[in-house]
Image (cartoon, rainbow, N blue to C red):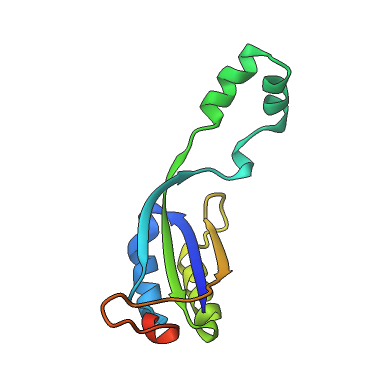
Length: 124
């Protein structure tokens, strides 16, 4: 089993939900999140902040803004990971900064509380 975590734009949630359903995933979690990519920070400004320049700190405060995102989490069998990742990428990729990130992590186990089912039975 693998956990797929996707951070996407807020306005892409409906398309992402539909893409996951089309890929065979009906159950997932979605959370409001805030973040930013490294491309939004000028290294010279960070260096100025580290050196104690107040002007740089003021500019970093503006440029260091966090942007509203959605973080989606889904646990799937190993053989579904590629389909899930491709589905998420297909609807979120614009080629512009802020398209998001996808992380894939191993899952050591799962238990469905109601039935006590374990492993892949718990996520099916």
